Length: 392
Image (cartoon, rainbow, N blue to C red; front, side, top):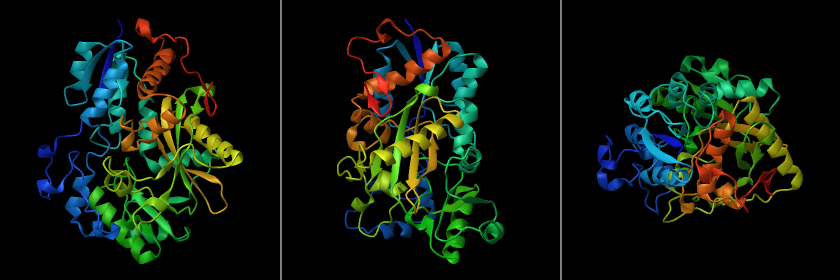
């Protein structure tokens, strides 16, 4: 039977988090709670320490997600958990799995998402998903955009600011409004309504905040006023397929919130017990726009070297043309539909259940590397076949 290693990072329990807020002010996943009557702007009254603490482990997976992935993979072989802690290399070497299913986001450094795949390559162990280079590239928002622009794939114009003294010079040719974000983060970490800057004073203030508290350069890019979409991709090469597109309905955000998919929109205002009706899947758009979005999505997936699966965020500019704004080769895969995780949501719209989604990623990875999975991994009568835009 195939031995499958499951590499992951698990969110710490609330009691393990060093936090400046009281325990009663936290949800189980370590994020700050928000009273229903509290306006969106209230979040900015939090201390800087609270703002940073609430999203430190946003990219890591909860126990329920890890258990759901393990259950799905168990139909393809024997699964052994390999948490990506400091002893991961030795445990990987001793276990010697036939293939590793990688959802580990890492913790330290700008190459953190590449650590597990690089260690797998060192030991010659096949793994799922993108390689270390692509994972590092896509975590650097500027290098991602440089690659996209070189290949003629639309993306907002931008500048990178490492010191506040360089801000004016670096952004002189970028028209307001501008959007700022940490250069090396995912899961909307560091993204709030304050990141949209309508004047130069605000731009300087928010850039200073991000530089000082996230300890990394800041990406400053043109703000696109159009609608936003997120696109799930499964497969490889010419066979890669965009699942039904997810559209963002920002009108459902709390009154006064800006039309951006911020950390608050993703994790605070949108809770399983009171979900936001923010998503439309499939997005209600014309066939022409759908084809245009799918084209730039697949172009980005391929030129960046993504493999097996990814989630790519697209936003329309003032003329209605789709631009790539984010590429995530390690997409979120929360199993509970109430959590509004976009890749599983798109899969469900295509008729692909959660277990089949997880298994498909591993099958694509195994096929790429000549790994034979368990006896139940072969296609059976009625199993879905991916085609462009959905299923056959």
